[in-house]
Image 1 (cartoon, rainbow over the protein chains, first blue to last red):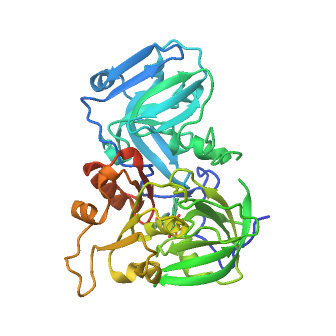
Image 2 (cartoon, each protein chain N blue to C red; image 1 turned 90 degrees about the vertical axis):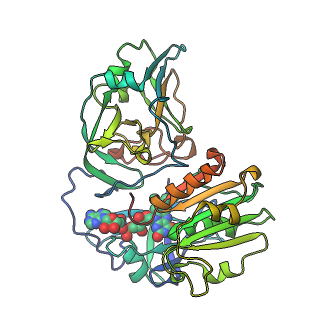
Image 3 (cartoon, rainbow over the protein chains, first blue to last red; image 1 turned 135 degrees about the vertical axis):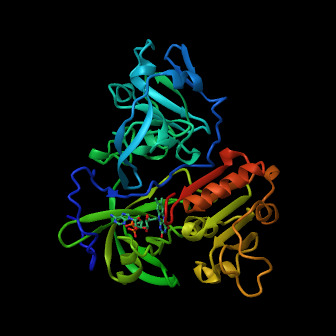
Length: 199
Length: 235
Ligand SMILES: Cc1cc2nc3c(=O)[nH]c(=O)nc-3n(C[C@H](O)[C@H](O)[C@H](O)COP(=O)(O)OP(=O)(O)OC[C@H]3O[C@@H](n4cnc5c(N)ncnc54)[C@H](O)[C@@H]3O)c2cc1C
């Protein structure tokens, strides 16, 4: 039973159909990161998928630009409780990038410039659920928001959408990434409110 | 992670718009400096909402402290800074966060960069210090009236140096014009990069971005710079 907070009314309720439990809506785009913002120039940017047997598939910035792009319009849910609706991005679907990659792995570890990592099941990167995006709201992605390119996996809490992405390592066994190793949930589904380990 | 019941045992004004709330949490498991809690408020009609608040001090038995700065049009902070009084009961869970933390057994020199209410988790680190590890705090505020923990920081323990940066209205006799934290401040009042200090930066996004970039520019190892962002605005 929840304890009522004396005198607390809260904001007028929104109908909130699209708001996962414990989230509130914001029009801002707050930033969350663990250290200084890495500055990665597009001339030295590379994106590498490494399979469980060590085969590497690498794309330069130019390679990325040459691939077919999509314009996902999605809602974002951050574990610090804000949700932002209807954000527009431009980038390459992971279905395209993983198309020629031969693997029997079930798990993926995403790596970023600056050392950040996050893990998720490979299936969550496929079937139109994930993109490497390089534009937000009609402009190139700024470094604070993960530019030149970040992962976008909007159906999971935003810490899974690694900024400054540099590659994905496919793994037979699951392993925790950066936040997952310090108490955050392994999967991070906002609709099941999987914020912390054990949720 | 379990929910705890917390009872307000004291409130203290820090500034006209910020207040420290001391809570008694009988089931509190303890925490590290830099961690935070999620606080849940529930209205009569069952509507509830949650926000994160840094722990402002090490646990004192079952007692924990938060300091909340009012965001005028906010939903939760006006309630916490205006309405809350001794005897009120909340639910909270924590401690949360295992990265932006300082442990009393750490031995590297510590550099703390605070912007506005970002002082809160950094104050917890100062208050958790038990050894002679040298600390330097640079605390950026708009004007003197915005400072939290004024008396405590006026006479810091030996080995803790406190430097203020005023960005709008400095005190009368202040030797320099109002200005944002810059590389000279960090060179004179921070630690040189060769000492490999542990750096903790907390405040609104603009402050954290600028301060962390300055540190990297001065040669600090990015992996020793930990950041936490909160305070109005986002970016
Ligand atoms: C890890 C962490 C630690 C933190 N520690 C502290 C701390 O120690 N001290 C502290 O004071 N704060 C801290 N914060 C910030 C705190 O969680 C809250 O964000 C802050 O108190 C503001 O909450 P609020 O409900 O008053 O404002 P909100 O209602 O969240 O509003 C914040 C801003 O967004 C706008 N906004 C958002 N939603 C709406 C809406 N539906 N309608 C209109 N406007 C809206 C408001 O205009 C306002 O400017 C921390 C945050 C995190 C993530």
